[in-house]
Image (tube, rainbow, N blue to C red; front, side):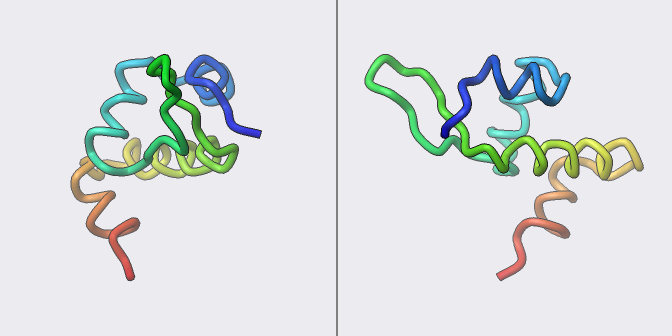
Length: 73
């Protein structure tokens, strides 16, 4: 079942601004955007955000995280 933005924020503890930074950086993406413009996310995005936060807190920039950890084919 897809998660709404608020559910993702509640489960991860990140701010709305940080969520949008992750989206803009290409680290996560919405599963769907409804006709009303609401973003819906796959449940696994919570775990991915937790990983991104840990890597970011260890000193990596979001751009580097994307290149090193998420752009692998």
